[in-house]
Amino acid sequence: MRLSRSFIPTMKETPAEAQIASHRLMLRAGLVRQTSAGIYAWLPLGFRVLKNIERIVREEQDASGAQEVLMPTIQPAELWRESGRYDDYGKEMLRITDRHDRDMLYGPTNEEVITDLFRQSVRSYRELPQILYHIQWKFRDEVRPRFGVMRGREFLMKDAYSFDLDYAGAVVSYRKMMLAYMRTFQRLGLKAIPMEAESGPIGGDLSHEFIILAPTGESQVYYDAAFEEIDYLSRGAGGFSHDSAADLHRFFGEMTSHYAATDEKHDPAKWAQVDQTRRREGRGIEVGHIFYFGTRYTKAMNTTVAAPDGTHVHPEMGSYGIGVSRLVGAVIEASHDDAGIIWPDGIAPFKAAILNLRRGDAGCDAMCEALYAKLGRDALYDDREERAGAKFADADLMGHPWQIIVGPRGAAAGMAELKRRATGERVELTPNEALGRIGCSA
Ligand SMILES: Nc1ncnc2c1ncn2[C@@H]1O[C@H](COP(=O)(O)OP(=O)(O)O)[C@@H](O)[C@H]1O
Ligand SMILES: [Mg+2]
Image (tube, rainbow, N blue to C red; front, top):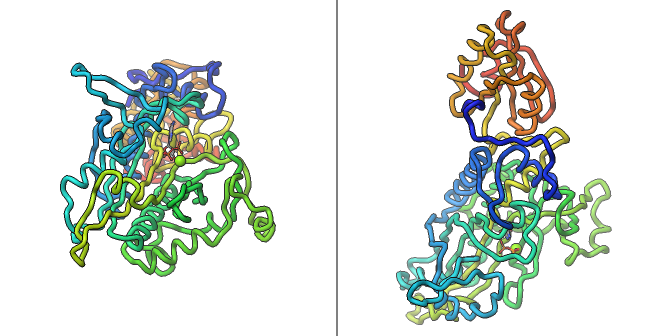
């Protein structure tokens, strides 16, 4: 994309309404704009990041064996009356009446709809287990939407639902999702820690929140650094596969053997036993949440399947959420500096910015155009009539992992400068060497 022709409205001033770094930077770098309280429009730069996060989430869900569907945002109140949640949900639910006076709602979550879809089609234990997911907008009329996309009213969530014949099966589905989550967060460049959460009357120990450290987090958290040393992506010896019950068992054992707790569940005596050098503590942001709730919905909604012995049983369910739009803010909270955003490579809107420091200089223009032709949609080409200083500042603000800087003196000698945003390191290279360094074959 050519910056001169793009819709990336960056701002020099810090917007007064933004209290935390990610919110400020998302507004300043032109990722989003608020249209009403807690509701945001995604502009090209932000939308690219949202799609990149969504892609990684999707790939890991698919790899775990979950199947993608797409349920509607608007749901009939009828299903929620059946589950008994219609009145309980209270003011957070946006209720709508259609022209025929039917009660509808904008879905805050999808347990009812998925259970209804399941009961329409699945009859036998032979069709189990099933894990279905979708990536869809939710609406919750939060009392205090704040911190930009981190606590919005409208937000994008990946929510998955598992159906199993019995508890033993539900445990396997739960562990599969937990592994998919750890792999997802590692690929996003985040250290997310699974922490046991309140699970209600039937959850047992099967409720975990996935939390990343950031100074603006909403709760105080404590964990053993052992979590950070595990490579969740490795599948070989010592690694974990979704398809092996033994691996999943070992994996879950590992996730629950190291200390990790939010302040509600914190146990100072156990914490004291964690090696000093491995104690990590700070504010935490919840980026995902998984929980098992047994037959809560299948019972209320009269959903059964035939078991091997011919009886009819209520399938056991779990649900598994990731805050896709919240993650855009959460990644920025975890990865920025005074100058702006520092995108992890896997989700950056553009791999590289090409900075033409003197537009109109034949050498600069030619080198930049050639680089831009090779990088294509991976590059944002700053071809504006602007001072060099403004271009440096905008590139740092937008946070592209790489900057290829082309000035008149270098261009005349056939050289460009390559800057790594995360470290600030700059080296002089030929354009082809620079392309090779950022992983684009020349
Ligand atoms: N208001 C919100 N804005 C953005 N993301 C949200 C919001 N509420 C929940 N999420 C994301 O969706 C995930 C799953 O939601 P859930 O656990 O049902 O939410 P909560 O913990 O708020 O009840 C959360 O871990 C979080 O990442
Ligand atoms: Mg939660």
